[in-house]
Image (cartoon, rainbow, N blue to C red; front, side, top):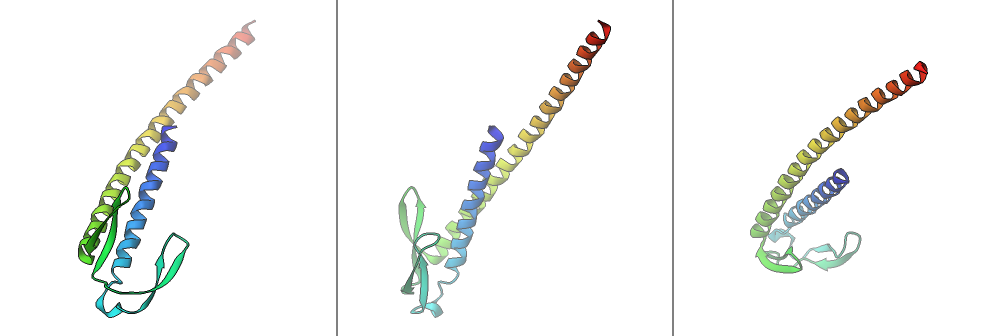
Length: 130
């Protein structure tokens, strides 16, 4: 159960890390040369609306729990980089814990198999002796 939970946590962390990387990539398109150009704005992961790029020096950033803050593009890039690094570090820690849990699981499984084999041999000896 713990291994399954750690796998899910790791997957969630890596997904969030990927979303921040995509956000950082999107921020790179906010340059003065692109002002007034048509773009597709993602509303959800599969729904986009047509729009014109305007005022591309400031963005609204979701900082968590439904709060948004207006930031300059540079500050938003910095925010994305910090979050990406934090998520990557946390995912690495979870992966390390997962590796340890799997190692312990393997050790316990091997020990139990050895004990089971000994028990089977003892039962066969008892049957043969009767």
